[in-house]
Image 1 (cartoon, rainbow, N blue to C red):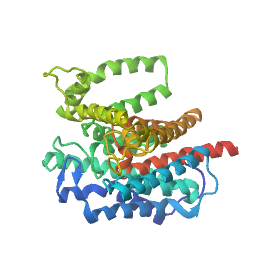
Image 2 (cartoon, rainbow, N blue to C red; image 1 turned 60 degrees about the horizontal axis):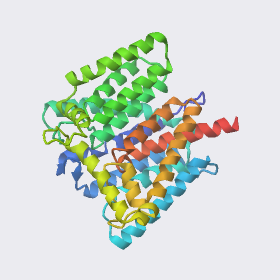
Image 3 (cartoon, one colour; image 1 turned 90 degrees about the vertical axis):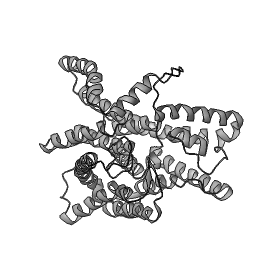
Image 4 (cartoon, rainbow, N blue to C red; image 1 turned 120 degrees about the vertical axis):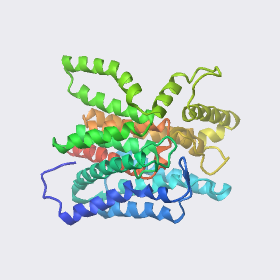
Length: 388
């Protein structure tokens, strides 16, 4: 991403900061409307998404279509178009049951088809702005926490992203940016510590595990015998630290995951964990009843089947074949990044891939925008390597 080209002007940096704030602070309006654990009626506030996407496009992209694509990027664009057609056809035939799939299309497509301004160097500035915005959000969430103003029952940190999963994933991506991509700076320590606290305070078990994965990957990149010993010590100490300092809700989820296969009535099972087991049973029941639909184009129960799993959501809505191809392309991006030793892109794509199993994360604005940024970074570096 970085280069030695002429510096980006102050006005351009200001526009990039506004665009990062627009997408990352979108859901602060939830504190002023009726909201219940992730469910709300956004109404006209939905226009803020369009404004945020428009700001990002103006700040980062040129009004010119790309003429050269790596193969997997072209396939991904084709798959998005196919999914959109299936979605629209079902919406007309069955009625619109859920419009959140449009978040994916609106966020991803511009980043895949338009050219970058300044050869993509503005993406560096965008991530720097995101660091500042997210650190400020952690501070704001501490005020909300202690003032007892949280809109989530477990007082989870959500920033301006609306839910703990989205907030945790963005924090972890930015931590990966600090460790693998950012030039060493004193400010990195502040950003790193602040974002780590933000991840733990989401009370999201997956976000905490993902944070551990990022840290282990960073240490493994600089592996030595001494550091291997430190990893082993950390692996032993981490459960003790988490159990003593993590929120009660996070510990509750960890216990639920351990007891998930215990069918006894006394099993302490978190609702969010047990529901994820139930949705897999529901999908398998639907597949058994309608195998042809399940394989080719998804079930016709509704225009868009929403589960707490991106994989099951796409498999139910667009079919098993489509889902296999879609996530195979994401995996291909990740593998090619790993081969090039592009650790930042590889790790971010891995974080998304892990999250796909437990959250329909691409339906949550603005997460598909961040996936699009990482894919664009990965594909541009792949093309540069081919041209060299």
